[in-house]
Length: 432
Image: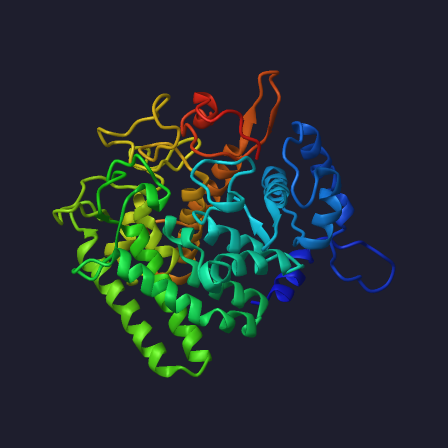
């Protein structure tokens, strides 16, 4: 589906009655202005990037797909997330980038650039009417490093860059732009193989470099084999194979198709814990770390698992209160585990139980893949909608004056909805 097709479908929602034949179904952008006016009044604008709050509505009116639905909370958060995305578009001497944090963080590189959420940024930014923002962000990461190459901090975190670029092409149809990055994507994949590939054929990663520090299954120094990075690399290999094929490079297409097939085989053979009925992490000794974690759903984001009831059974854990279900979940680790916790001290970024928007987004996309592409009875469309409603509800913050406003932050108490990073005040107040 191209972006133009999507826009036609997404705007065909309201029919204005008239005498004679019905008029085309079109949404009026101005009818959504009250959402943006509300967001602009919520909190002081502390950081101003390319588009200040005063220009937010005009920019959104010209750039985002319009959306409406009977659930007004979902509708509001849809516009709120675009409002926050716009805040993070930053102009640099090397072009636009999309930042993860508005305020500088010590682990970021030049221009406060971080690669951890790059896949998410591309996935969302591909729907913008004006492609320059996300196109320049991609160019920044792949072409402005040493000697015009990849940025050195692209591999600070795991990612699915090639897969995200291929998804972007499915949206905008810009084949020339996609193939322009072919060589860079090959070099990127080869660098991951050099840095993280184990003799087993699977990839290792520290939890912190997966963007998931203080997890039950990992650590900042251990080289564990995780479902997350191996799923990303499977998605990247599939994407590179597809780009190679459309570029007439059949040898490369076969090579990367084989890499993807091998990762699929190894992930299912070695990371699937039959006893837990879940994809789990292997420690450095090659043994399962006995805990179900939210990253066990990541393989479905890329359609990696075979269409078998054996694998689909993992999804029963999503709606299980002893598994990942919570009022503001899903949790990042199963609630029945002895090391599950909701921390209010120590590192303010912990993945040992709290709910994370990053992880929930991956899980919702993975679940959509299951419902659209698999034959199974473990989970339903109603479960998806309930999880989406929970995700919507979670994106709020209660201020000291009692007001509840739309908000998105880092780790969240999955029981109460309180944002833990803000509660611990370890890094100060964080504006969306």
